Length: 53
Image (tube, rainbow, N blue to C red; front, side, top):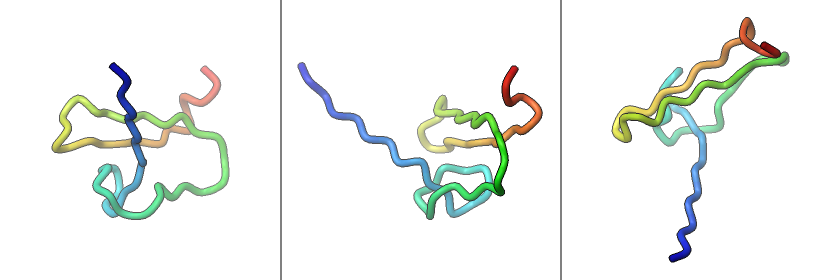
């Protein structure tokens, strides 16, 4: 069985993947955390402190 999964990360609300525009971030280095455990409430977080660890 072949499945094609396409995930577009977009956010209209800060910290929530809710189908808005692209996730906006200021210039810099970040680690992006995405929580997909609840498909009805997927969230994201940019963390500059964890980058490179």
